[in-house]
Amino acid sequence: MLRQRERRRSVRPRLSCADARGSAEFRAVLNGLLFQEDITGWCRPNGFDRLSGKYRELGKLRFKVANVQHRPLGFFGPERKMFTLLIWSTERDGKFNPPNVRDTALDRMNQVLRDRERANECNF
Image (cartoon, rainbow, N blue to C red; front, side, top):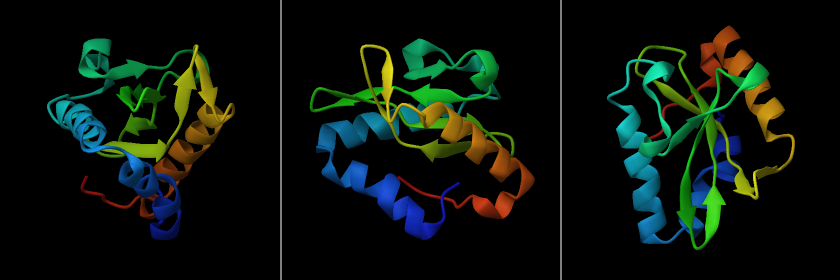
C-alpha cells in the first residue's frame, strides 16, 4: 500500500532493526497467509488476529522481536490471495502504538480499494 518513499520509512527500517529470528518470524506469519482464501480462515494460532467493530476487515500480524510485540496491520486484498500491509505498529497491554493506528489503517485500506496504484508489491 505504501509508496516507495513511505515504505522505506515505515516497514523496511523496522525489519532492518529486527534480529534474524524476528525477521524469520515475520516472514513465517506472512507465508502462513499464502494458503488462506479469505479473512475467515485467519486465526490466532497462525500469528494473525482479526480486528473487530468498524475495523473488522483489518487484521494484525502478531510476532515478537527483542521483547517488543510488533503488530503490522493489513487486509486481505485488493485481490484474492493478496495481503496488503498498511501500517506498522507495536502493542503493549492491549494498546497500540501509535494510538490511532487502526483509523490510519482503515483509511489506507479504503485508499487502496479506490486506487490500486497506491499499493506496491514487496518481497520480504
